[in-house]
Amino acid sequence: MIEHTATTNSSEPKPKYIEPNAQHCYEVTEEDLPLHCPLPGMSLWNSHPKVYLPIEAAGKVKCPYCGADYILKKS
Image 1 (cartoon, helix red, strand yellow):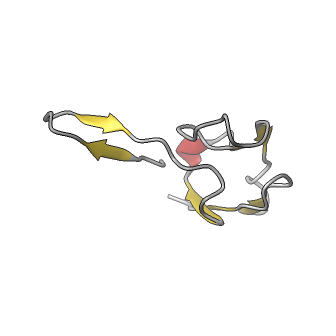
Image 2 (cartoon, helix red, strand yellow):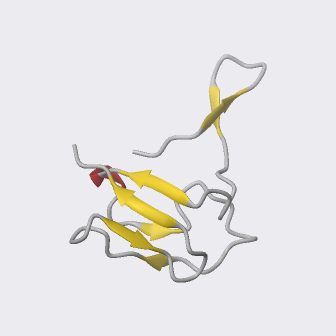
């Protein structure tokens, strides 16, 4: 599962937005399926439309919009 958190002055962690298209390779798990790009937590205002990616068969896939590579990490 992909998790991104940031801590502030309070003791509770706050969700941190993932910068869209900042990384070129993302590892995902079966918990992240069905896979789509941009990922949950990415700010969508400066990204491309959501597209679902078929990663299950090959274990890897490339987003046709931004070129990000996704690799399915088996449990």
